Length: 371
Image (tube, rainbow, N blue to C red; front, side, top):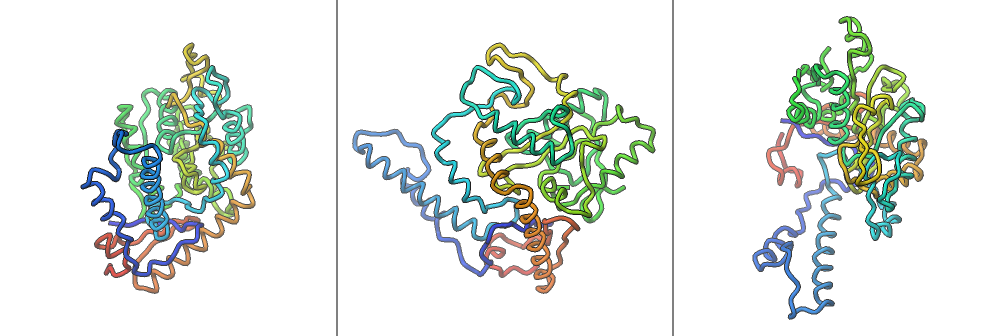
């Protein structure tokens, strides 16, 4: 088995043998008393001030637990250097809903669609497609983006077969089952890329995929390519030697995760596709007085603002610096693991270091495992 570790751009403490604070034990004791995380009805014996104080203490304790966990958080690709988002905390008092198409108004007046379109326009520029030629939206995560993309592909090619790498994100296999599509799995190289992909940080050779399809006699209206670029979508564009995925090539859609590299504190993603494809899914909904083009009905109105904010804070130059720092961190980790006698793998142009899974979680946390 393998363990995955992304070289985060946040400043994390070294694993130095510290044991957890005992939060879980404390919480277990509270739960035995019927308190802790249990939802309890307000009662007359506890005044409003006492109740608020009790709830505040529970949340504060949990916050301390999170701070400790994030100091040695390993194994999942997420950026935890996101204190700048605190500047947006006042927006939490508003219940925003971006229901329906992001480019269409609705009867729901509390939304952030203007911010959403601003984010989409930025990604359109990054991925090489004109504003009047693309359509997209901010999703609730990478899986929803893949759901929408594969649905478009199926609508375009009703009898098509879904081809994907054996190490693709698990959502693609779930989607094939949901849509009852034939799914053919393509073997992977040891590095994780297609043998002829978030799991080991591998980047499939898009040009080779396109060339293979054309060599097999498929015209460009006979295939649909979705690029699930959960993390690499922020890395590849800033590397000179990296193979580019762009709408200037015959692809159908691209998606990224907003809570991974950008560190948005709520799961979200971005999907872009060609505008001419979306008419197949578009339906007018009288109830919300807008067009239904998305997988989800109600959509998070806060996440587009958070994405808009961080893209404005960092800009392309800031993101390029983050990518450079991640690459340095990942190479440093790989070299230190090698020096410690631990076999590891780091794909070129990736920030994901893969190494053998430690025997137990506790031995991993204390740094005492034998590989």
